[in-house]
Length: 342
Ligand code: AMP
Ligand code: MG
Image 1 (tube, protein in one colour):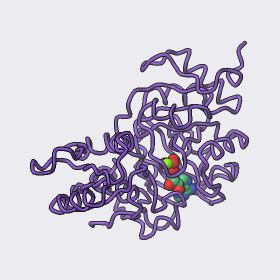
Image 2 (image 1 turned 30 degrees about the vertical axis):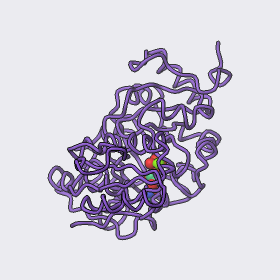
Image 3 (image 1 turned 60 degrees about the vertical axis):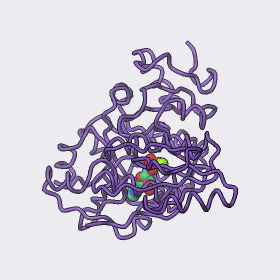
Image 4 (image 1 turned 90 degrees about the horizontal axis):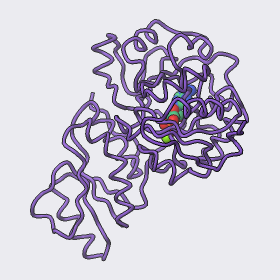
């Protein structure tokens, strides 16, 4: 039998609809303590057996991730939650019923058996049931939890295609699964249910309004998520280009300033203003908030491919998913979290 860890590094699955054989191979890699590139509906994950300390250590090494940045454990279904969380409040059940499988991560008090390496030494654990069909097949056949942070080097842009993972971490993974481009494009909403009140630590596609509507949950944003979520630092998702966030009315002035200083600038915005100089590349952010979330990281990568010194970005004004897009843009600019509107 072939040992998947003896195979060529960064081996790639044949096509978008990976075959059952690929799923079986991924499960073998996980069982042997290897790393897989795992497509999910949010972004691609760097997956390992969450119950294997050696495998989890490989995630941190591959990403260059500080050891106190905890990982999200991915499960196949809500029924597995008891093995990871020592308390499951009613609200967790309600949110899971409403949004799992899907882009919502729940922070709960950890079960004693959860590895310290997974939780970064915290008394809580992050759990999510993803909806991507390929991830679901791997999770079902594997049967355990898969620790999977985004498959990008620490602080860099999250991957939303298999090619992104291959370029950044291809040598570090034992098997890359191709699930096509990620449908949502930004990381999951993280909601902390371990305290007296539910708090959002990271905005995402599941909005507070949706949680209020579906589960009747009154959830606010954490005042300082970095205190409870050590991964949410102010510089993250950053391209090589310096990202400058400004309102659309000031773009022309910023373009002029860049040209005067001999800097190569581009503009990222929902719409192009016809008077902007033709030689300035325009990167279309997309019209709807969902589209903007889906394309954001690809546009940041495009800025690097174009060799831009400065990316002039016009943050969208929309609430809901728009808030999550602003949050990622602010971090790409090194400004930290977006001010909360409600
Ligand atoms: P990533 O999977 O790379 O998108 O990052 C995972 C995010 O989940 C980071 O921001 C972590 O800080 C956060 N996270 C994971 N576990 C916990 C936890 N137990 N408490 C708070 N935040 C967590
Ligand atoms: Mg990440």
